[in-house]
Image 1: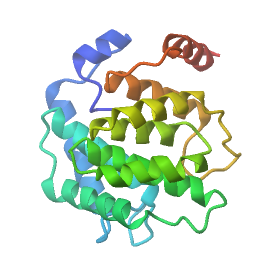
Image 2 (image 1 turned 90 degrees about the vertical axis):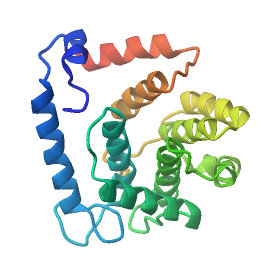
Image 3 (image 1 turned 120 degrees about the horizontal axis):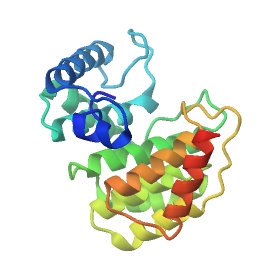
Length: 220
């Protein structure tokens, strides 16, 4: 939250923000905590130790990139170790997620998110992204992995597949089971997908209607 709550952004949302020193201090504390939770292989644990949760790594790497883009001093070792882990997993086929019922979906979701994060720094192999879209997209139970994949394809230069994947993401009927294992919900996915459109200057025909529906659901 400290990354987003600068005074101007908070004012637009109608609540007090954080001054520059407070934001910097909170982010530095977050970097230190994440460094303490990062395992030697680059993934992160929830509470420390070697029991890591790979599904968290793309989110953390994306946060670190966002902080760096916002001008904060992100520890380079922490960031590069995260990106190298994502790169290796993307090239070798991802994490198997054997302990989960929806392993195929989770593996695709992880690879698609890793691809998006790496594409933000021009490090996602286009051939790998194309292979994921052409051969694996049918395994997605939700729209979010398809959006991550579409955005990654666009950032790496394949606008044809990017546009198709983004359209498919928003047309996808959510088939999320009661427990999927990604720490998400249908509401979280919808909010994140719409935020990603805004962040990447993308649009879909139903965006405004879905924003309104999301707002109503959050207020219900």
